[in-house]
Image (cartoon, rainbow, N blue to C red):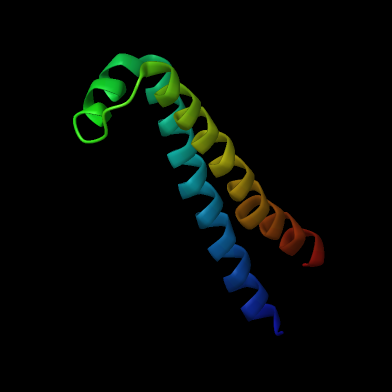
Amino acid sequence: MTVMELETLTRFFLWCTVLNGALLLLWTVLFLGAPDWIYRTQTRWFPMPRETFNVIFYAFIGLFKIVFLVFNVVPYAALLIVR
């Protein structure tokens, strides 16, 4: 790879990290700040008990966080080290 390709790839992963990090932060803040509103909105389409909803939502936030770290932060950090 040339230097320019590494620069482009580094910028790509930087913006992926920023955008996905903002999405994770927004999702977490909404869940912590307005859980009743999210529950009411989602149970219109998918009726379920509140406890089940909390477990599913918490699991999805955890899964998204792992995917975010593995596929955004780690490649970005590796590119910064390589440069």
